[in-house]
Amino acid sequence: RKEVEQDPGPFNVPEGATVAFNCTYSNSASQSFFWYRQDCRKEPKLLMSVYSSGNEDGRFTAQLNRASQYISLLIRDSKLSDSATYLCVVNTHNNAGNMLTFGGGTRLMVKP
Amino acid sequence: EPEVTQTPSHQVTQMGQEVILRCVPISNHLYFYWYRQILGQKVEFLVSFYNNEISEKSEIFDDQFSVERPDGSNFTLKIRSTKLEDSAMYFCASRYSGVDGYTFGSGTRLTVV
Image 1: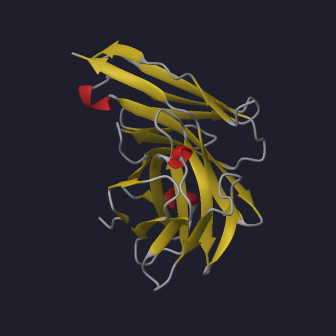
Image 2: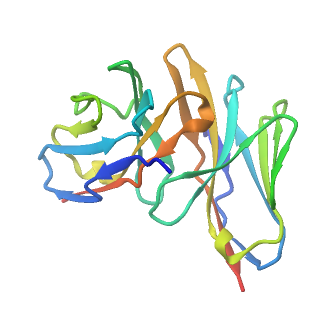
């Protein structure tokens, strides 16, 4: 079983649409959760952290369900500039520190 | 905004050659990482480095790989004898503390021919 699993997409949506991505993770000891954005052939950039109570940043809303080991990202009022790959990322702490485990990403294409 | 700088942006090397990928982390950061991403695949953890030593490494990070922080500013990844399957984008990352604080460099694209 993959450690962090995402639907690869692509999700093709018109401008202004609402789109939701999901992610599941296998390590119940995972402690921190993130959505990163990656543009083609660029580095991952932090979009937002995901908290148990759910959190919102402008048009973006993230949710975490620890019991189901499930993370979601909702994008409202999609813009052309939202076109990118969205990476679900989990941070696992151990005695040596911590490391990020990335999902394979979900590709979003927003069309005019 | 402070940046993690990686050089070169693209390196082409022949199979069996040694390569050194260079990174300059953000100056007050304490934790340093290398990740790689094979084209079309997910980003994978290679190694973490703290207090001048490796703190964790993945199965990918075998004896062909090594890391150094020779002068307190540069953080290098060396691949001793490159293989075709080492072709990938290599990302350096650093953080001061707190898991939200990762900053990734723009990557080095390594092509082994």
